[in-house]
Length: 368
Image (cartoon, rainbow, N blue to C red; front, side):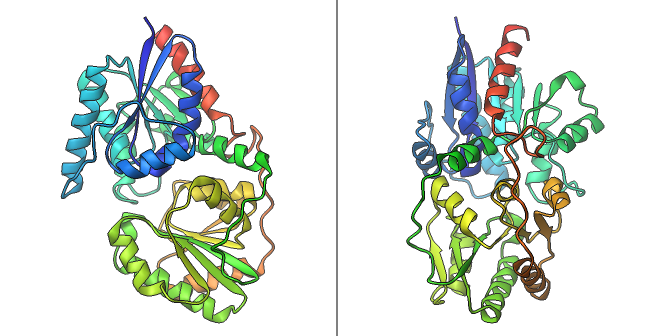
């Protein structure tokens, strides 16, 4: 009887970072892979996987919760029920979302081994960003298999007492998807681009920047456009109303700003590749942009991707409009960073992480 692997995904980034893992696991003999839409962002997960040519096997339903704690409780119950009902032998979670933490708790409830994809990311503060940093630090003691994307992530886990044999440095799985897009080499039309010589890509969604943080970044962006008449800006607006309504209030109606719905991966990578600069509070963009030669301004207090800062591909900036404008201006005047190669020595790997993860899980299930 094949071993059953349950993979939980609840957000768009999880879909992107699990896609190559799902494909590689489904190609493994002796494994049955069940892909679960956790219900955290049900419609977005279904749509993103469909764009990637994948479909979920299980979709218990959208979670509606008034608070983070209630959402975690509901997600934990749904994932636990799915794992139990379908006889899972191992649970896979990715990253630092509510779904990732809930999957870890569900696996522990059932006494099942947990494989954590993108393990070991840390900032210098135990609660920032919240709740992501808290989640990943709590997932680590539960996981049996830690798939660290970078050398630093593996070192972080060792520093917390995780045994070497449980840590597997595999590269970052989102680079698998990025490599496929770059190697495709087919032009992707971007009809929403403003009619300007250069463009900025803006993405904002982190809980830590809700409210006044969004106001400050939007004010900085408007000032930057006022100073640079050759610049346009494209912002895929996050579906969370707490984010979207505020961004639209500040940026809608500007002749050189395009506010668009969330883009599928191919369109977003095409946008990021053509952008002269990315301004973001996202984690994933800090990994993708160095392979595209696009500089990144990270509007956060800290980052769990220090590799991009060390490369000079990303710059951290506090939430102060004058600092954001000054750093953006500096990056716009500087030469773009050289593109990273899809090679094992690159900080985030060569774009073949999914194959390594699937092979390791298969070996583990054969000899747990």
